[in-house]
Length: 123
Image 1 (cartoon, rainbow, N blue to C red):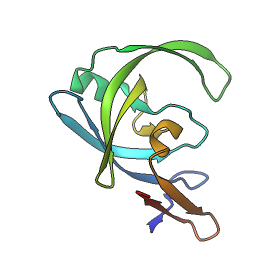
Image 2: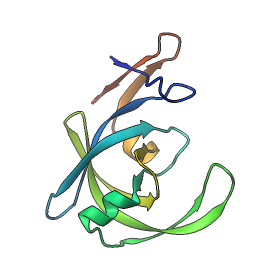
Image 3: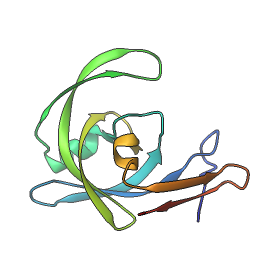
């Protein structure tokens, strides 16, 4: 089990993530925040720049404030708990990965809010 991260208010489901370039496999390791309200995974712009990712397409997004925008997408490999999957993600200025439902669909996640811990398994 992994403990919720109490540095967030309210405490959040945070874990270690690797973002890999889909071709040359260069990688960045950082924290990821599970967000079941996000349909798409979002990586920090700094990671996109370091990995020299090329735009793959565009997506229309609406953020949590209701602001609409069109954003470029990028192909990456994301590795969580030794499981790697290929994803099309978008990128914004932030310090961690926002792990959306597109990535979460590969996992079985059990969150125990009362005890402030969660498990994430490859089913």
